[in-house]
Image 1 (cartoon, rainbow, N blue to C red):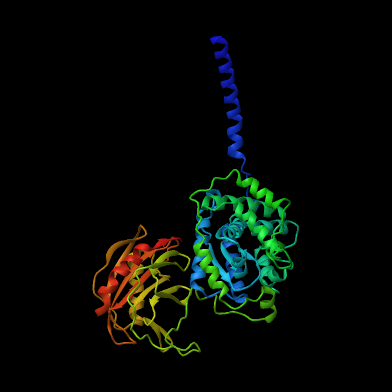
Image 2 (tube, rainbow, N blue to C red; image 1 turned 120 degrees about the vertical axis):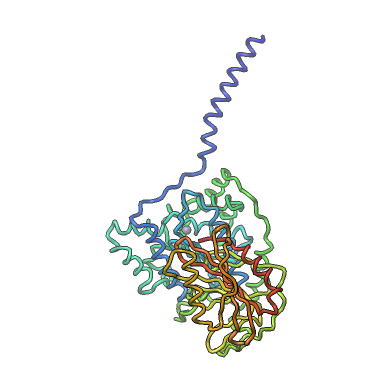
Length: 485
Ligand SMILES: [Zn+2]
């Protein structure tokens, strides 16, 4: 009896083991394998054409100038970017996220990383997860390099002359207007059903890694359909539905483990409340038909608030009053030129005087004199192209150029070694006399190097008699910096 039952147990164990051997690889590989398509372009080609197309897109469509909405979408986007599986990451891609003030339920991403989410898409979504679903899908097209893969294919059939031709066919003629019109030539934006399936599956994986239920991606496609986004110019005309899209995503979701679940919809709800308070947005087609261009928003940061809080907006800004509220102890996150994330006091605002420089300052702490931005309180982040790749020499060059623009600027300390987000950095203290107010002020400059060798700097400024109140704030801002270049 014992023997038999032992033998039975042994056989049973062997059977279970065999099952396990079969079952384990099944469970592991049940996730659909996704591979790159053949692509004759380099990843830097993706970056290049994406950048050109982004510049064109930003002239054709109005960006929503609301820093709260913008930084929220950016933060969701960056969470998704961090969740891209390693085999589909490209260090040279620079992902950033902007909101277009258009009512269509749509979003598009360009090769190399720029992504545009329509206000209508955010307002149509029922939850942050649904919004993130569309973004994860778009991100997947970029990570899988579908734009240039599709161009490779087109070229094989003699449809296109080369990468320049592709950029031309996207940008020339109707340009991205073709996006709104849903017309031909949009090789980067309109994909085959095969690519759509891949973007759904990788999107689901990114969702799970980022802590979202991947089924929310499937739900969003239903939401889009229900709200009529399937029609001409809508998301589903740029992203045609493969067969059983909804079921396929949900099936894939069974094999995915959701990490660090995000269930907080409060920010999403708050952002939607803000969006509802704005006047109705035009559709992309209406924007196209109006023929209006937006030539100045591309070289300004879309995150900015009112650049002239103390002046009239018709081009007659006033100098900073220098009277400012004490910095809030609550901080808010911003993206710095898509190179870093930073937290600054909630009652400070964002302003940008060029594509390479961004300010955070309290109301009254900035304004304009003789056509130049002038700050009495706040921090400025910027990128300097220097001749030297040596941090010390590059910083010297920066300080010299600052002194050329500020005749009263004198160093008060030597260089001190420090770090920004773990990277070696240099700090120097300077004295200045503010050109607008005539007040003595203290200027602190901290520099570090970007991966591409350019110099990232933070300049903090406060009047001498106020400096004690600001020193800790500046320290906290510096410590909050997270590099994303
Ligand atoms: Zn798609």
